[in-house]
Length: 175
Image 1 (cartoon, rainbow, N blue to C red):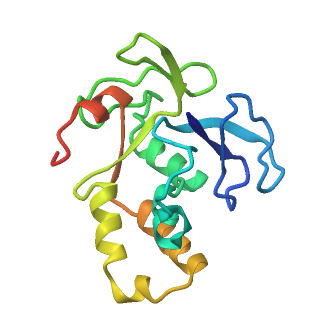
Image 2 (image 1 turned 180 degrees about the horizontal axis):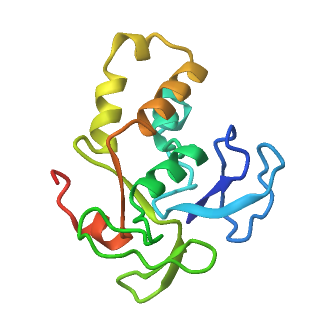
């Protein structure tokens, strides 16, 4: 079963997971959603003996923190030329955006996707940052809410850059 994660307009909300492609109101906080920001096609709702979902640390790792709205805007502003063109910081070419400020790109299957210009962790990818953080004693001894806040801070921390979606997907993770 495919699960869709919706980005919520309330920056304090973590958003919501749903199997619906048309979720307009966030079921967590009741605010309008910005649309799908992540698709998980590995979700399996079949009954199994694996109770790893009941482990709070395991279920916390399933969800990636989201960008703080003002942080995303700050990164996009840094990648924008004085003339207003947004540039990919990997290939150095302009990122073409539509009137809504969204990048339109085609996946390998030829499907059109419309997303915010991609923000990329580099010099330590998100997975590396997350691993380093979760190994610290401070994180391991924190309650669930504090862990979420610590992950959000690490997720939004520099260095970050704006890229084409396909440039970020195609790069080796050491770049």
